[in-house]
Image (cartoon, rainbow, N blue to C red; front, side):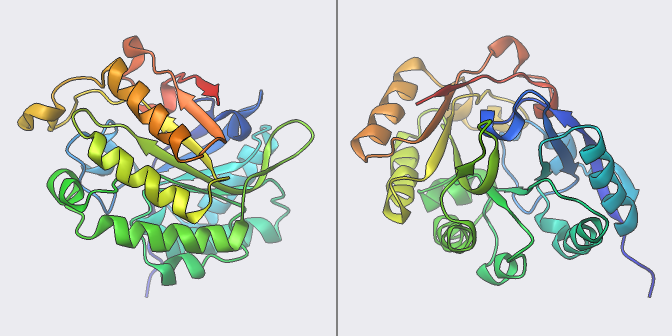
Length: 274
C-alpha cells in the first residue's frame, strides 16, 4: 500500500499568534488543508473547505519541521492537523529522531476524540484548541458539528491532563501547556458565555485568548445575525464575563479590520495581555 500524502496549504515563519507562541522570531507554522468542521464564517475557507494546497510525504513534512527550526522558529505550530493526525504523528516522530528540539504545538478546533488526543501523548508540548461553541445549537447551525461542546470539552480536558497550564521560559516563550482560544461571534453572547463557563470549570488559571477578529466572510451572509463584525459592546460583555468567572490569564485580540480579509498567516493581529 502506498503512503498517504499530506496536503499542506502554506508553511513558514508566522507572527500572528499569541505572544508566547511567536516571540521576536516567529512560530514555525504549517497550515494543513481540509477541516472536519464546516464553519459558515471561516476566514480560511479556501484552505479548509476547498482543500487548497499541495501534497507532501511524511518524510517531507518532517524535513519542513527541521527546516523551520533552522530558520529560527520558536516552535512548530501545526494548524488544523486533525484530518492528518496519523501522518503528522509519524512526521513528528521522525523529526524528533533527527534533532527537532523546539516545542510542537497542536493548533486545532477541539472537535476531536479523546482517543485521538491520547494517541499524541508525549509528542505534543503545547495544545492550542479553539473552543468555538458552548451552545450546541449554534455549533450545529454554523459548523455542522453535533454535540460540539461535549466533544470539545472532553478533548480539552485530555489535552490539559497531558500538558497542564502554560509554562514559559526566561524569554516569555511557551515551553509547554494549554492555551484555549475563543472567537466571539456577533449576536451570540449566549454561546460565548457558555464556552467561558466550561473553560472556567476546567481550571480558572488556564490561559485564554479571547478573539474579536470575526468578520462576515465565506457563507456568513446567509445568516443575518452573522452578517456584521462583532460590536465593541459584545467584546466588552465577553471580557466582563471572563473576569466574572475568574479567568485572569491570557490575552484579548485587537483585530485590525483593514487586514481582516487576508489569510490568517498574513495577518498581524496584536493581542493585549490581560
